[in-house]
Image 1: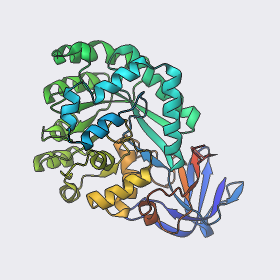
Image 2: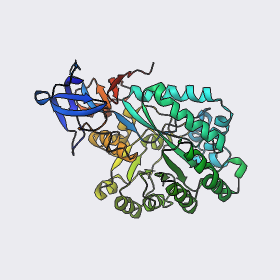
Image 3: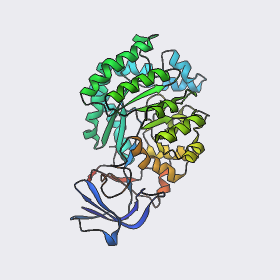
Image 4: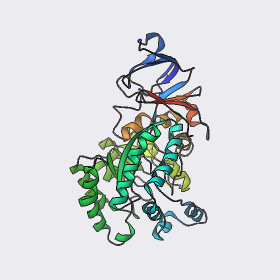
Length: 400
């Protein structure tokens, strides 16, 4: 199959990789050619794309899509002066979503998450990471991970699952965080991994969650099972999370608002991706900016993600996140697009498979009704995605 009459943003070099009179040839779900139409091989059926801009399908490398309940009341409390940490210590925050998620049935979890996922897909997403972490007991974590696996077929998208075993200390382990970590490492993680439910693991390294030492123990257990790791790092305080991620050779360190110069240097040495989450920064009305200039100077790849979750980033638009990243964090539109394509793929360990339009990669494509790639980060609320291809198959771009 061959797509013709397209403008390509291949994202395969330092810039957009723009090709105005372009074509893409696809065989067996893979790209066999992406370049000028005049040199395109004959690949069977030819489809005229009407001059659409084609980018790699978006990769959202950090979401918490599966949950029950709402935290609108907590948002209102923050607007009235309460802090995130005060709410968490009062039994709100993550703990409130844990209670609601444990009580919800599988059908509710699936249906509510599917609605959010379809909206992401309507905004060009073809690969999405979905975390557990709102169960914090083995049965609910298992249910969340199974729902995540099931969502892939329902939404026509590739799903990567992450076991967020250390999200917060569950109420039944109050004051016994080390005992909970032992349960996760010795029982929950091995059982869920043996069932093939886990693609990676994650933890929240923060004063209100888990210490570096507890996270390191969890990561050691994951490495013993040959599972890659990721980390929520330095979001609310300077806790050395970036160094913990680097030491563990994590795929990514996410948030990073309070990351120090030493943390940036550690990430650069390790090759980890910095996943910035401007939706949470915006929603929490934070003022501490992540060290974008230092990350750039050190050559740390910068990815973006929606961080879709009920408490700090109830956002299902990668395009809005791109705009926030440019407006709030000072990224360029090119950096923002790289953040949801090639660098996001790298944050999931998938850069060899997707994230750019190159021969041999999956034919995961997003088609857009825009004149230039910068427009994707320009408008808030626009819905310019007109089609998606996942592994070479055209799928709907609608949230309906």
